[in-house]
Image (cartoon, rainbow, N blue to C red; front, side, top):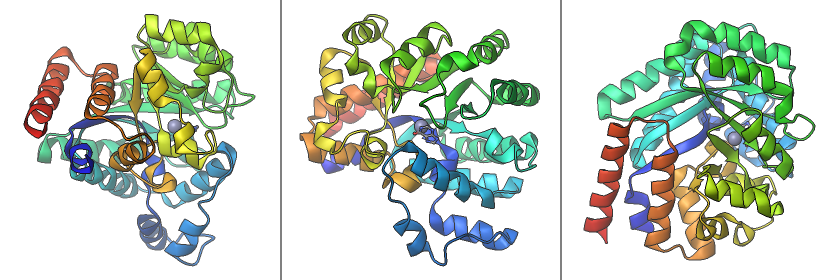
Length: 335
Ligand code: HPA
Ligand code: ZN
């Protein structure tokens, strides 16, 4: 089963590119840019990755991103993630980036986007990897700042498929960004939002009704509202669930308490994702393996989870057909 999970063609729909920056690369980039990290060694960095909630993680995650200054840095970080995708048979990835984490330090939007997109293009040309880019607004900052960020991103519109919402959830409800998301949709962007990770089920309703999102990122607290779960099922609204992230941030105390498989059985379109793999102990395969260890995942369940992510992705009908064909061929030969 381990080999089956590792070899399975997959898609990742919830990945913060800044959260893929491994300590080794963080040190390398920090060194060449003359940025001092508050850690002496890679081991010290890893030892500091013990979190009790989302905010404790975010504080250290924003600190790590401080080493990123030049286009080359964004390229190297993105390419390192895409290589992991290739190793783990992730054939399609929809990647979040947090421009405000960089523009607030005086870095140009163009530097960030050109660096990331350079790597996306190379991975597509070199091994046929398919990708999409999603711009996330930092919800702990103001709606005005988000609007300004959206405007700065408009010249790069052709590179960005959707906008999303991340960072500290509680106290920053989706309704705060209603106008920004209205504007984003009028510019042709699709929308997604983190909701129901630490925040209440009501934030999921708001994301659906006020921000008109196509997917909910995390969304695991939906189970606190039965009528919401019914709606997610009826409207086939995908949840991009991140098992290792949820246990590392104590959303669930133990993987065996995670609700992803219950939701799958109920008919919710749940998907498996890594969120911030450098911080939470693994990429896509490690997330599948952690689920397998906790729940003795069946092949049917694993295939259903991957199928959900293909169907929840923002690819064309033709690309979707091709992705499904690869998965079917794999499960026939492997099974
Ligand atoms: N939640 C909110 N914001 C984030 C996350 C997350 O899991 N990862 C990176 N930014
Ligand atoms: Zn996330």
